[in-house]
Image 1 (cartoon, rainbow, N blue to C red):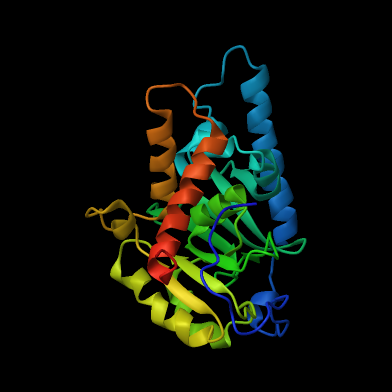
Image 2 (tube, helix red, strand yellow):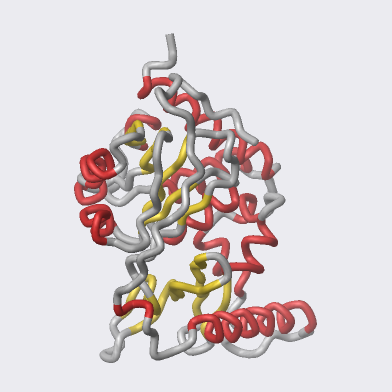
Length: 282
């Protein structure tokens, strides 16, 4: 599925990994049904899309949900083969906040719904307003034969790693990494190469030691985008910024870029960095 390198042989074979099942904390006892909310948000998104398709003149104040999607992830990345599937499964629309919603699943159960832009009771803006568990860790192995696993930090990275079809684990916040042992959603990952796609800030970089301490049977490496791009980057620059920049660079002045070319460029850059940081490049 991809050309990411496998730099060294692990001393033990890979194991199938499944998240722990000791879900006994109060987060399991919701006073609202997230699955129903997810369905309603999806219907609202479909309604917006239908209006955009069929209206000769759009209503005043109409929100184009496609534009909201492209604000998160470049349109040419959404045009990958997985794009429609990812949108249909995870995205919705909040009519109250006029913002996209992203639902996170454990199997077919919605564990978390994040609204990208909302407001609190005082009207102050909130990024990624969350319903459900803020500790939930989305985790997916899309290729059992690929021993690499990427850690993304944030909801945009969740969508990206789904679109790119890479093995992943997602931390909704840096603080999750500081308490893996007491988090019922921490996946039992053994004998993999873990590559953390670090945000350009000190809080995110501090998660590396916690990752190494918890996932002791794995090889854990940081991927720093200042090293990849060989330049100083703004505070907070992240994997999402990097992928969007790659798409823009390939598209240049054209209206569209080949989405496969964008994907290949992203994966090739990651593969080159993996060879360097693991010592696989001779």
